[in-house]
Image (cartoon, rainbow, N blue to C red):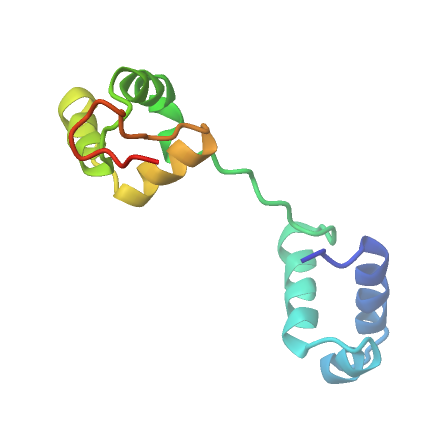
Amino acid sequence: MVPYTTALRSEVLAACVANEGTRVVSLRFEDSESWVRRIKQQRRETGQIAPKTAVPRQPQWLAWTNWLVAKITAWPDIYLRELQAELKQDRGEEVGLMTICSACRALDQSRKKDADCPGARSS
């Protein structure tokens, strides 16, 4: 979702300063009353009218990336539950299986059964 431009926000606030009601301004600019109130509140509290920017979040698994790659390289047919147990034992970190799965996908690390391993599927 793209935030509204600063120019549009300025026009909305100018209409509010001209003593037009929130409902009238929202109808004129075809937006919700709550958005108009939030823009007015943002200007009142921070003095800014530009859209807020979110700080990019770092993934939780970034701290143990090297550990994960090394573990999968050493044991390519490891299960996610085994990785979860090893992570708790080696690094003292408790994470969900989905976090480990997301890390493996982002790092392009696949866990494959060895052909010599019993239970491995033959193609």
